[in-house]
Image (cartoon, rainbow, N blue to C red; front, side):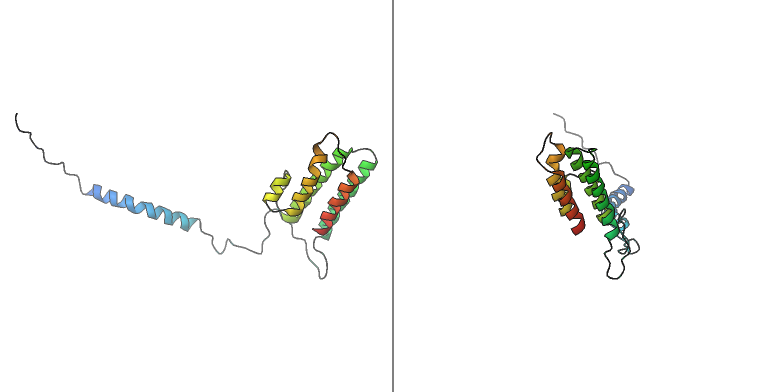
Length: 164
């Protein structure tokens, strides 16, 4: 059996070593760059500005800054009551309307877009008064028949708006 002829290893150019080292250094540089470019800058943090969509009513000395907002939604509840007494809304419709008013009041009060919130959504974002109200109004809103009285539901919604 003849002997095996050994071949010398192929030499690589020195710049390939430099490319490998640069690639290894690029990985931590990438992370440092991401952290640097996405950091919170002092000029971006304006704590005095309200969150988007949130209205901050002017507060006078000794006055309730949310009185005007409350009154708008209390008037809407009165309108729902009048429409129910006039026969325009059935009990289910009353409960659906109350749910919508409560969602809109929450948006005006907190700035959280609660237009399509369910009770579990409101609880997840820690909107206690809205979560409890939506939970209480869920069955009468979607049941074919319900023993819930619209007057009682309007009273509870009114209390939530007055106290929150």
